[in-house]
Length: 151
Image 1 (cartoon, rainbow, N blue to C red):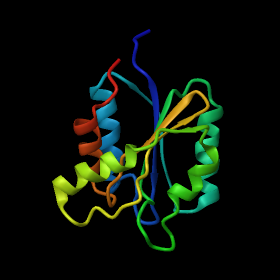
Image 2: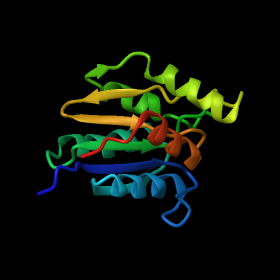
Image 3: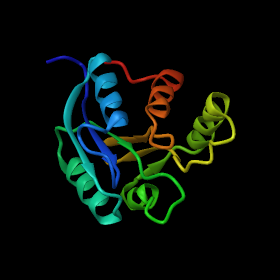
Image 4: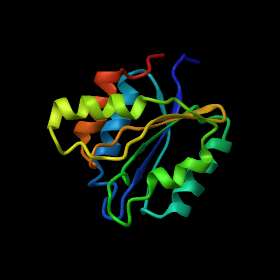
């Protein structure tokens, strides 16, 4: 068995499909390129309880080592990823959101008012919201600027 992680990818979107989920596809490609394995990948609508249900199942699955989430971090009434995942966190790594927003500001300017807070720890799992306005650029910056975990 290799040293890579089994990573699940969740896209939160009311409009994306498997064919149009460019951010989820980028995350999948990046984790495979980094030597990890795709444990699962799915799209759920922007609904707090559907997000929590999918993440909770992966958290309870001892074969899933990490979870990447993209989408649902904007300011509309439907954007609810931060609120959905907050009760699932065991610990918070303070300051990660600020670092990511600063990197985002350098890359795309003033449209960095996204709510991607964070790198937070679940029980035995890590979640990183690498989304920036649903664009693959945000996922790319999260990987290359902050580094993608290497096996």
